[in-house]
Amino acid sequence: MATIIEPTIFELSSAGRRGVRMPASDVPVVDSLPQHLLRSELPLPEIAEVDVVRHYVNLSKLNYSVDSGFYPLGSCTMKYNPKINEDTCRYPGFLFSHPLQPIETVQGNLALMYELQEWLKEISGFAGVTLQPAAGAHGEYTGVLMMAAYHKLRGDSKRIKMLIPDAAHGTNPASVGMMGMQVVTIPSDDRGNVDLKALEAACDDTVVGMMLTNPNTLGMFDENVEKVISLIHGCGGLMYGDGANLNALLGIVRPGDLGFDVMHFNLHKTFSVPHGGGGPGCGPVGVSKTLLDFLPTPLVGILEEGNDEEAPFYGFVTPPNSIGRMKAFHGHFGGGMVRAYTYIAMHGPDGLKDIAQYAVLNANYLQAKVRGHYKIPFDRICMHEFVAEGRFEGSDVRALDVSKRLMDYGFHPPTNYFPLIVPEALMIEPTETENKDTLDKFADALIKIAEEAKTQPELLHNAPSTTKFGRMDEVKAARELVLCCWLPENVELN
Amino acid sequence: MNTPSNLKYAKSDEWFDPATGKVGITDFAQSQLSDIVFVEILVEEGEDITAGKPIASVESVKASAEIYAPASGKVSKVNQGVVEKPELINSDPFGEAWLIQLDGGTAGDLMDSSAYEADSASRAH
Image (tube, rainbow over all chains, first blue to last red; front, side):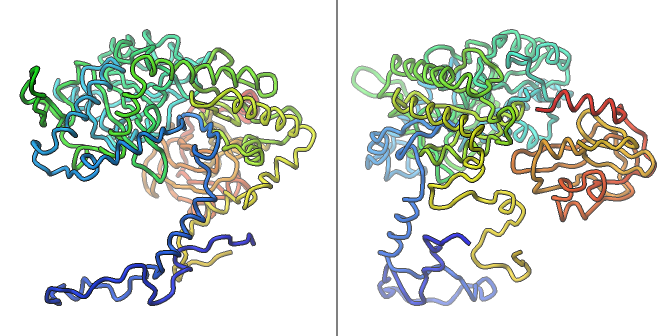
């Protein structure tokens, strides 16, 4: 039994304790709520303010974050989140506005949203952008809805298949599944590109389109991306770009110029909005001219042009064939948009290009350092991330063991077991924000661990040994889903 | 790796027993997936299924995988035992961990045990 170093907030509860004492009601108390809707029990923790603060501060000390160390979680782009973002998103004008306020009173907010739409269009080469989607997968679903609406409006009802490479994020087939479409998996070739023969064979008049992440989850820029797009367009399909890996392309390549019809941005990856706590993510979607009329409503538009003296008057506009609303209000404004706007404004066009170049340079530097110690299955110049194999000749060490051992060296592990096409995958994305010293220390740790895997494998199997808790039993955790601190009566713990 | 010679095998790592109509996933598949933590069977007793269509999904601590029908026919039984104890797939993939049983059943494009052994060995890492 592991030592409990911090009880749950419920275990800290003591009947009658209070953080805040409410004043007596100064209006008559009426007892008009229907009796059958009232709960007899509501087991919320009763706890003093100081104990709440200590509880969460203690928990936060157990956490590992980009503010405490290197976080090379592949495909997640765990870059440093500049603190100026926290300053701007707390400007009172942003912080204390309400989405239902009359538009004359929130012109500053609307100007920021309009400009962010314009900037994302410029960065990606698309004709229009919606800021509404709440996260990347929500953006995917928005994009797939628009693709379906496009075919439907043309009376092209045969199209039910979405082509998805085997290296794709799981959210791609999930978004397609939510639409009731069929997923057709397209294999990768031995250079990590989409297999063109397999793609050609799958292209017919039942294809809705294709969802492609470029660079893909192997960190490879698809060398035939223009051919892939022309095959999809050739059979009447539309090309979806998963923007998860846009960090590698900023200022270098614009997906809209390559021929993509629609793409989501992950503001919480590329544009330094914090990940974590389950949100808020932010997944704006850009579209080419083909899908412009299908964008969700409302978009921020200019209702009256400005002049030298007066700013434009901003408001909401609805595209003619809009798929409708994707969210009750306008998306994650303060949480996502203000921070991303700040980040883009602070960097400017040249700065954004630097980001992509340093992200790619850092990944290639790490790849070069660990090559020879770890198998690199798709070994060519990578983009912002690369995938290595966490297994060694004559050793029973696996990727999970390598990752757990990295924690002993003070690093957050990379993404494990993804993409699925690489056995024992370790997917490593350093991002542009790390300096050479950090990269060297991380590479040294990886190299030392590869050595330990051969000479002292038990060190890896038993890792981590320097953390508060040792190796978690992931199998037990997944098989016995007991997630609450009161056990339901019919559950027995083994 | 265990590959019983009385069974037929799909490239996607399912087995089919022509004698009993039972269907499951192979020892090779379970070894690649590692500890199985969840099984969902997507077809019901009495349902007609077609070879190549999804019949179940399994999840391990590493990945989730779709299981495709290696044969066509009417489902006569669904194994609730394996849904309740997913770890059976790891311990007894060809025995207690059968997923569904077909009434007769017509095999799809399947391999014999030696062809499957060669095919899975080429994919083994």
